[in-house]
Length: 65
Image (cartoon, rainbow, N blue to C red):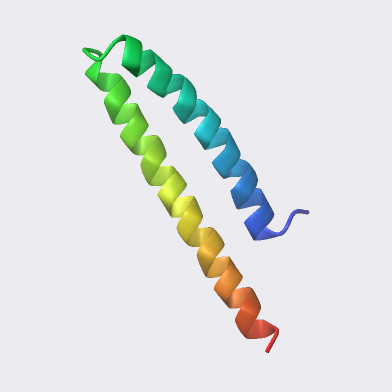
């Protein structure tokens, strides 16, 4: 099994790829507001993943002291 930070990093990569495709569609079709909402949701998921990675890193540092 992958450590928590590795699985979060893989999740982030997937989210970033999905976001890039959505952004390209949104650039071509800025009137499709639902794409902006989907981008916001993905951005929130990426931010949550970053927070979990940061939290995991801090917890690992504390246990290694």
